[in-house]
Amino acid sequence: MLPVLLTVREVAQRLGMAESAVYAQIYRGNLPAIKITPRSIRILESELELYQNPAGPEMTVAEVAGHLSLSHSEIYKLIRERRLPALVRGKSRKRILKRDLLDYINSRPNAADRGEKTT
Image (cartoon, rainbow, N blue to C red; front, side, top):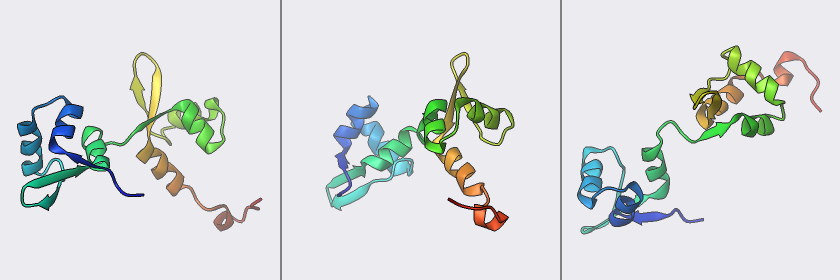
């Protein structure tokens, strides 16, 4: 699948800012862009998403529990034990960054390395 390329005007509309502000972000190096022709600049949609949220997309406890096939209480236990970093959104809503979940998964020892049976 081909990547989605956005014009400066489209980026400006999505960000709710002037096109000149988008150009300023590009020239400062804050928003990577591709020079298609001498007068045409495009921004990858994936780069815009990273610009908007550099920490990565957030996941709910339910989403993380589903992904890891664990209960909600087990996820909350991992958060309490500080083994899985979480952000607090609102009074008590926890969110986990996808990058933190990937770091947690990648930091886990392989079952074969610990002599455990795998199914």
